[in-house]
Length: 118
Image (cartoon, rainbow, N blue to C red; front, side, top):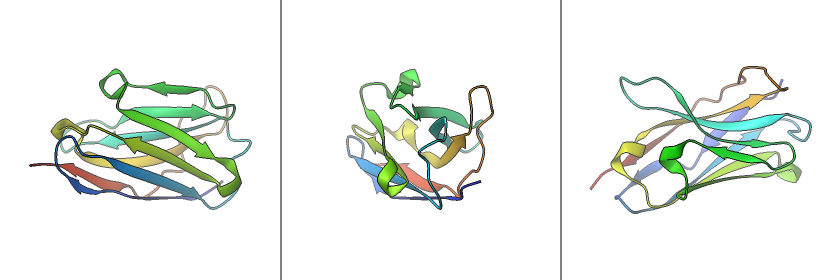
């Protein structure tokens, strides 16, 4: 079971960009999927974007066209490029693994705070 460490969060103005990184302690090559989730105060955690071991991607509707998830298996790292950020994107962002089809996401990292405010 890999351990995950997120980084790259911060405070930006609306319309700004951030790039989040999720570094894994071991190989992610054979992990079925990696996902970025977020949790805003008072709200449930939601899956924002996921990427499969073969590069297939999925996004929640609210971030389509603005966020891009990618992975570098050689560096055991998953990224989330976030563009045109909005105040409603403010949340703690977490990385997690889905080890196989149908399994729940797990191996949660500690999260990184993203704040979008003018």
